[in-house]
Image (cartoon, rainbow, N blue to C red; front, side, top):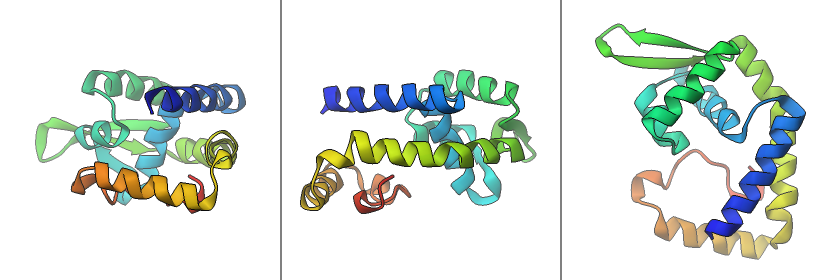
Length: 145
């Protein structure tokens, strides 16, 4: 499982960098922000969704903010809290990268599995994931990313 994950993500990451100048992790962060209410999330929520350490997310957010794909904002009700918010430029880059990502997932991963195998795999993962991850907002295997 880990070797397959590493192989798939390595290839998708290389394709995203080559075609759009953003890493797979950057794409994922932008995707989570796009899906969030108001295009923003608390940094801690974003780290959990993107499965990154807090320090790893901070470095990634700094890079994305430097490219003006998102902005970091202080939380008005909690001085210790911070939000990341998607910018218009970030939304545009995400839209440009989405077809590349979807096609890559289909070709590199889903294309090797029949519809029945995809469903079996989804069923197995649903048994393994904690209940709070069961509805992560990810698309079903049939919708391809």
